[in-house]
Length: 259
Image (cartoon, rainbow, N blue to C red):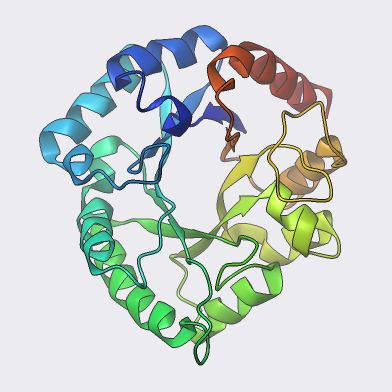
């Protein structure tokens, strides 16, 4: 498994030319490239061909992998974001990855909460993904149209079991909403294309790995047992992201070595 970073929290203060060497120096194996900045504003310019090729070259030059492209902004209720994501999926191979991460967006108060529209739009995105050899990794999240492992598996069924419909497994989210994290990992199996790692307590607040209530060693062992050998991106919404990176990378690599 790869221990990766996410540039989102550093995106307004630093360019990718500055961020990628920081990730290397901190000891990460790669990074998830986020289309949105830390304010969750989507950046359509970063998926243009020239930008994709530049970021891919930065990763290669620094010996890092690009684990996934991520857009954690609601595409069901926003046509502009939907258009950016369609283009982003088509551009994903230019970054050197085959995983595109999505968020299902907050449930609305009307009707089914936007679930039917989610299914319809994912159908469109899966067709684009098939044309370009990309896997879509949807992230279950508290308050979203897809929140639990159970709701994700229902979605897969409603999409006809498409093998490209995968999961971005956020360990903290599963801790809050699923009865048992290792059991969820086992149920998802090879549907897990990418993961977010952090610790968490009883509320939805992302913590550094050495804080919180989650036994990360048990979760990592469950992921390995399920055959997952992909990327775990450190997901931490705090201005101290840059400061904690070296300790985080060292800590998480240590957990993997000890398995």
